[in-house]
Length: 325
Picture 1: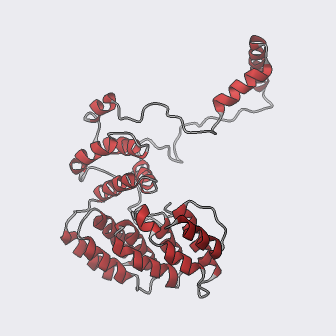
Picture 2: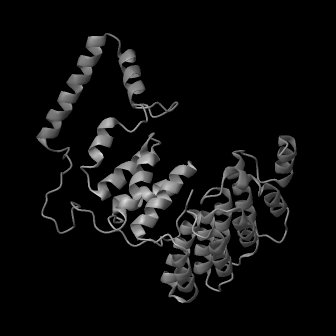
Picture 3: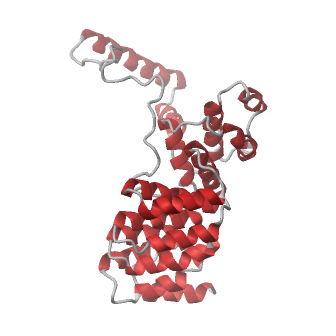
């Protein structure tokens, strides 16, 4: 879950081939039910249905087969083995870097074996060659919301590459200055990049220090993106400041994002998320928190544990004791 409150990434460029409002291309028109052609089409459709019923001799059986064919319920069934095909691998080098990145990220999102490996071996060669087209931007956002942390990591790698970020301590210091004294949009941009760089191993302790400092900024939008940066940094050291922000920040948006960061979004592991349950149980009993924040506390507990218990601290404490956590 990553409910964007704005996006610090550059606005996507227009994709080639998109029909613009001024285009002279004539779009398809809806069928007019008053036209004679509609009556003809209806008669043909009825004739097909009658033929199906006569051919089977059993209308109910025909309906059941059609229903089974169209259903979207039931257990997931693979359309094919989730393996990057030899045909696709052979064709990658004939594609542009942009096409390679988009295809492989789509396959990674769908858990195709081999997609992450291909991205890892090619990503350095894509530097300076990727654009945040609407399609690529959408794929990155989908990856960052994946339930698989490895896919989220791939999304981070490609976001950094598309942004042209240099993965070095010098970049962190430059972004630290921008986060401190730039315009609001520059500060937001810097905080986002810092979290991603720190997650990929670029001086994460220093990144944590910079982001935590910005949690004290008077501008709630800056604090919001400091929270997002901490969520994607995802180290053990990010947990305490996120908990404090969830409890204390004066902005409802910032508190909500801190709670979401602890529960689902960002790069904390499941083990790290479960470590905050005792703190959330204390928050559930904390009379100083307003009703909205109490609601987010219980939502976070449900997201972390997968348990659908009511908004009642006694029920949660009973479950927690019985679970042996």
